[in-house]
Length: 308
Image: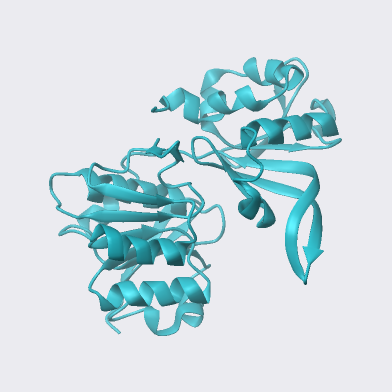
């Protein structure tokens, strides 16, 4: 099962909305929906569409307005209905992600969740009374990594860390790197993706919905550190790609890959190279991530080769 381009963007997402909101969204011009980056719904809040850095409010007539007072107000029942449909009826399968404040919907869209956290032993056991959803729309932008293949990856995979603040375009860029390294006849990489949140490959019923290359295998929905170890032991990969490293377990798994001669391409939240170095220590530089790509406003601002 492969989704079409149209079904994977906001156009496909509106099927998860109750009839009243579906009618409003369905009247928005296709060109605008295809550019949408986020859809936000909250109890008692206007229905919001974020596109190209602007927030627009969906009106009851299906128009768009910069004024919140003109937006159609979402009810609590509608929030719950959207959440139920996005889960596809499987709360249990998504339970661990719900604890972390998000689920991943068909097509690789990450849905942030706000509600009431229930604690057990000082840890979140579940989030209930969900009242706010932020649907971040996954996009494939083919060719977005082209600049990297004239420099960092011109001869194949290299250890590389992509950094930016949240929402800076890291995942979109990483997805296109996978497509080229894992699919182009210029390279012979055996690529593995540790896709904990299901956003890179957007696997649905085990089948990647995004173009990630013919030589690429995916460990989906598994904690990154475990997935990296499994790809190394079981799939004989020579390159591992993963998104948003940060925990001590992630760092330890990256070190194990590097010791085995496996190239690692990863992303992390950081504003600049100094911040990344403070957090990752000797993983930045020779023997670790020698190449750093800095994104700002979803554009490549800097590519640095670190020799030490």
